[in-house]
Length: 291
Ligand code: NDP
Image (cartoon, rainbow, N blue to C red; front, side, top):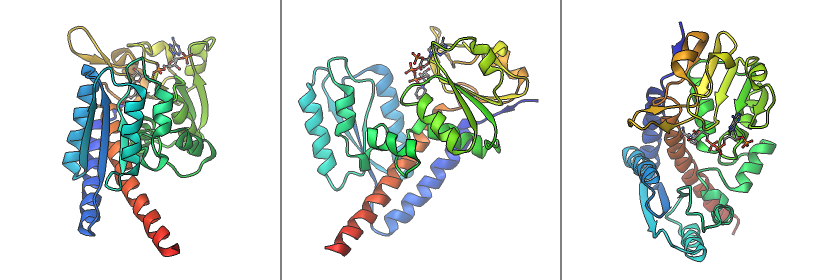
């Protein structure tokens, strides 16, 4: 029988751990603060921002909102970020994506101080992951690894196939799996004979953005299947990139949508916020020591 990986339960455990650590951190007289920058009022983004703030509140992390108007220009967004970079009270900065199309997303992400880049999107953090140096790792792929580890699924030596090569999910996830000594293949829209590739996978991760694309015909019998996709159907229900019903009988473990990878992203974000506060304090202490 397949194990249904409970992302809600695992993310709740992580939130409890962060809450405990934040409380110990506060007892030493230090705080943790996340600044959330949102441009416009895209409804899906508003839901994500609200959930991130709720998680902060629950764990004792302060959150500040910077709601800029839909037509805010590049300079307005950049100067908001520069001010947050300079603000010693702010430990983490998150710019909610996607940004309106008139803005240069790359330049905006690059303006965030890498030490406050809790989303792990800055090129310095992406580069650090590539060469195996410490830095902030993008929350969704970090959440996938945590989900696998906490479900007792070994990664070393496993054949892992990631479908999707985006900068925020597919690529960083492939690097993280490699760090865990898995053998990793990445598929994308130009991959030929994709089923031949995916049916080699002991662990298959779908981060493709196509509802229900991955069904049983893509799977090796007994594979572990992780579904990163999130889609809302017309009737309001949700589904992932994996056809759960068809895949389930052929898997040894699988994540549902909702309740799989989704909740892990926010759990890893708040974990990154605490990490940012702790690293910044260490750097401050070191700077004081050497001055
Ligand atoms: P992107 O659209 O940025 O990337 C999709 C990737 O899938 C691309 O690399 C693309 O290939 C590849 N692809 C598209 N069609 C096919 C196909 N037919 N066969 C093989 N590969 C294909 O998506 P994201 O990585 O941002 O997100 C992926 C999914 O995860 C989405 O459903 C998104 O909503 C969800 N998501 C969920 C999060 C969570 O918290 N759970 C967080 C972030 C995303 P190519 O590069 O060639 O175009």
